[in-house]
Image (spheres, rainbow, N blue to C red):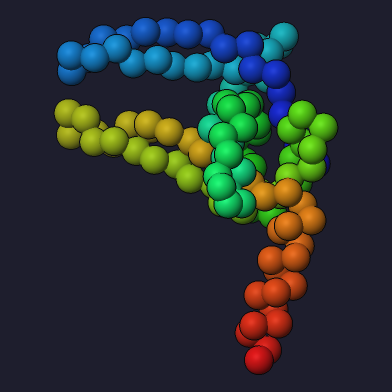
Amino acid sequence: MAMAYAAFPSYKLAQGSGFLQQRIMCVRKKDKERDLHHPFEVVEITPPPRNLGIRCFPSNIHCGESVTIEGQAYTVSAVTHRYQLRKGKYEPREKRLDVQRTGRYILNLYLNDLLQKS
């Protein structure tokens, strides 16, 4: 189970293309652990969608993994990496986790299985 690390964000403002860009880095006590965790925007996708903020998770987090955020158990439904084309290169723009509460996730799996069987 992955735990959401408290992100002590380090903000960098970079100017490019006429706008300021904000970068958030996950800061840990040891430098070798710093590269293992990345900031993700976390969104609970059950209607209505609710933003749970920016949290630090391991870079290899995947669908179906259980995470705990503010004492609530969630299951990752989707991991999205978005890129933007700049100066002929694709640069990472956003990392997003779509999560559901664990009970809701299991119920959806069960209902989808029933639908497939009918």
